[in-house]
Amino acid sequence: MPLLYPSIIFQERVLGFVMGSAVGVGAMLYDQRMIWRSTAQLFDKLAADRVAPSPPVQVPPPLFGKEVRDQLAHTWNSTVDNTLGALVVALSSRGW
Image (cartoon, rainbow, N blue to C red; front, top):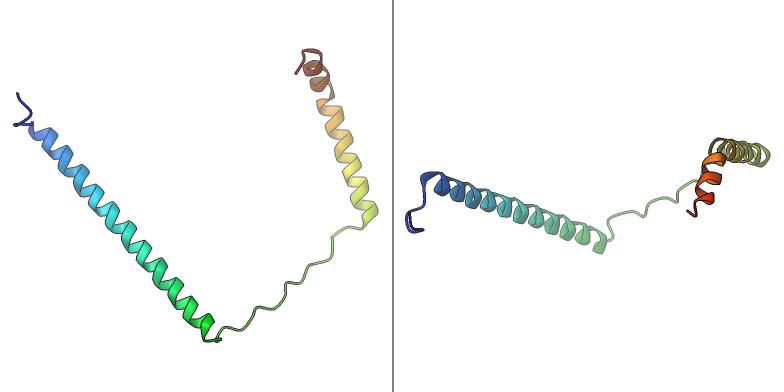
């Protein structure tokens, strides 16, 4: 059949594609409009100086002291070296 008379299945697929595209574009435009509106509202609040500045963030003290952290790092590094040392030697011998 010539292209002037496409099959019903082809027509349904094209219709589905067009309708899906229209819904997708509509959803995108709606979300974009909502983002612009919320940005404009936030700008209005900030311009009117109605938003109080946030308090500075308090950094919590470390859980462990420096000696404990150094010992933990040393233990971790030696464990990794012992576990993967043979793999590193094997890959180094092959030129990796």
